[in-house]
Length: 212
Image (cartoon, rainbow, N blue to C red; front, side):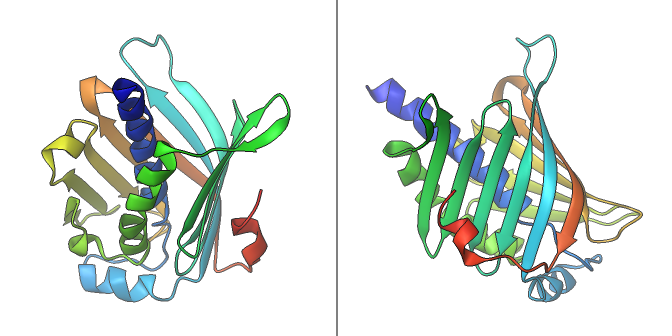
C-alpha cells in the first residue's frame, strides 16, 4: 500500500512539473529576470501543440506522446494528451481534476495523485508569471545567448531524486518562445517537450478548464 502511494505520488509530481514548465510559453523575453517578469504580466493565454518524447535506458526507442496545452491567466490550465492514451488534466480556481480514457469513456481520477497535484499549484502559479527566482522548490539560472536558456535545479534532496534538472531552451529565431524543454530524471531518464502552433493571448473560454 505504501509503495503504491509513493509510485502514484511520483507520477503526479512528474506530470505537474512538466505542466508547470509548459506554462512558460511567453512572448518578448530578453536577458534579465526583470524583463521576463514584466513580459509575463502581459500574458493572458497560451495555446499550443506539443510532442513529448520519454527516453529511458530500458527502452530501445523513445515513448512518444502528443497533445495540446492551454493556459489562461492567472492559473487555469488544460493539459491534454491525444496519443497514445487520451487523458486530460484541468486546473481552475484552485481545483484540480484529471480524466483518463477507459472502456466506458473518460473517467475522473481521485486519491493521492490529486493531492500531490494540489501541492504543485503554487509552483505553477509562480512559473506562469515568470517568477522563477521566487520558487521554494527550484533554484533558477538564466543563461544569455542567441537562444537564451533557463536552468532549474531542485532545492530539496527528495525532489532531486525524481527530477535532477530542467532545461528550457528559447527559440533563437523567435525571441521569447520556447523551443524545447528537457526534464532530466533519476537513473538517466529524460523527457523532452517540443512545441508547435503556439498562439499567444487567444480567447479561451473558462468552460474548457472546468470539464473535458
